[in-house]
Image (cartoon, rainbow, N blue to C red):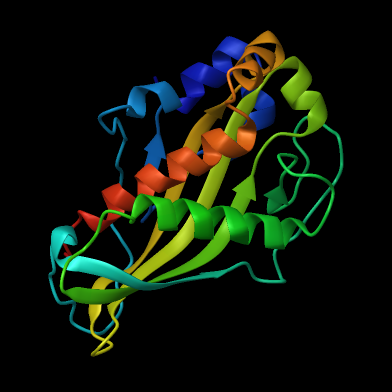
Length: 214
């Protein structure tokens, strides 16, 4: 089920249509439940590449030396409670606080969990720069749901040599965001917004590391 169909079901296509995929983006739009155990991602376009020639290393040969996540101060943040406020960061899954730090922690923890099983011989650095983290406001979550739209630049380096293993690419990960009764029932099962987003991102990084440079 693609995002447009999900949003049409909510009768809210006009408000949330800005979450569409952009060119040259690795794009995902799959229900969270459909990603277990197999990833049911939609992939479109090509990836952005760095000038350096990449070195192909399969994920089973990797072990993570560090995960560097940056959430630029230039990204706009809002606490507006409209249905679809205009900002780079919209997040209500944590208590009121520094939203950039909260988003950074989500990526760090999710990617650490997603790469926990990598015990190869090649230490790698996972470099992430968040471009967008647009979740739901309280009003949207209470009434209609929507989409957790997460976009980030990903590059993977050999920690010993600095060689590029996976060239820089823009990844767009869209996860359906529950609303109304469905959201309440999910929380009762322990599936809070933060749990769902974090689990999804942990699978996104696993999928990205399987890719080969073009």
